[in-house]
Length: 341
Ligand code: 13P
Ligand code: SF4
Image (cartoon, rainbow, N blue to C red):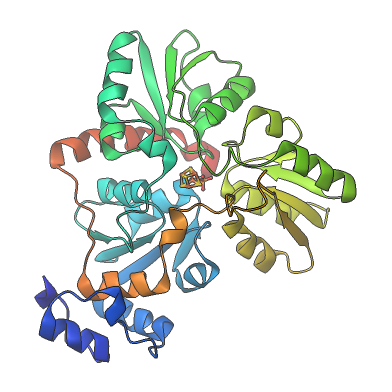
């Protein structure tokens, strides 16, 4: 595996060539990780894709930052040989499904997602079999196996346009996020059969504390991701995907926002709109960091550096699953074209 790397100049990379795979405790703390990563990127012809929920320093070294749809598109069209995916596992899997000849590396294989974990393929297959007259429109936050069992994939930014394109008589299963599903039912006027999954981060926000914040900051607009619970969404001034929230904060005349999504996105909001104030929506408990996605936050600069040096962990998907999942993802990319381009 290591022989694929060109001879490298960093001490840690030399050590890798001598000893094989290196571990995090072997990383020299004096290394300038940012410049090491940039150097490795050139040597490997790699591209770094990052989601908005990554730590600020990871966002700052990424070649592209985006929501799930934008990152899917970018991973499909990249000319790089290697994709380093700083996000969660289903996002890196999506990159591999869409661009299978590329090597897709992740900083931490354990970076999962509560929505993906809450929709096991065997249970989802049974659910589909119990409703043979329904098609399955499945949120991209799911495993490759579940994608392969679905008809059309969607993201939070493409779901409404996709559902509106499905003939009205057609029955629909929507999985795995019940909150996004309910929100889409209201937006499209469609009745859908919902899988009862939820995001541990977006279900944690406290309606009570947010209403208190709104009262104290009367000019602040509440913006929310559609994975939040219905009761909270009812108070929102704007609802959208991470990219849509970012754009809204830039375009809006308001200069104060309460942000009901993972707080990592505030880094880009502050960069895009320097004079504005962004208040992270609080969770109910004082003693938790529950508005941070624990999976997204597993990724660190050290782990990005290590995955590049080690060329591992690598995302691999059996071809029979990948090709079926690709059909459902291709439908999403096709059906969301007009809405997004
Ligand atoms: P977006 O597609 O809006 O970026 O959402 C991804 C996600 O995981 C939200 O929790
Ligand atoms: Fe999954 Fe929620 Fe984390 Fe998004 S924020 S990756 S939906 S656990």
